[in-house]
Length: 125
Image (cartoon, rainbow, N blue to C red; front, side):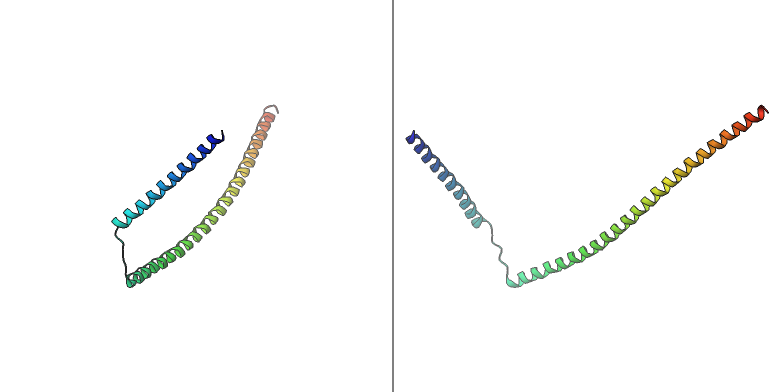
């Protein structure tokens, strides 16, 4: 058993070493192909400074756009808050109108009942 376990451990370690070497070889081969076949882009210091200046201009323009969008967002949030308040006011007004409608209907019903009582009383008078 001990010999079996030792041989299994040895095979396992050897297999792991083989897998690691294969992975390393694949990485080295890909790097070598990349260095041989892909041209390296060389830029001068002036070109890099010009590219940096252009990037700074773009960054500044994006910053300005961000400020404009921030102000637009602030205005939109304020408009949304105004609309929410208006909706709440309209909901309260609707509730009051419904209450008034119910009161009016109740008064009309009471008036109709009173008219019927008066008619009934006049018939038998």
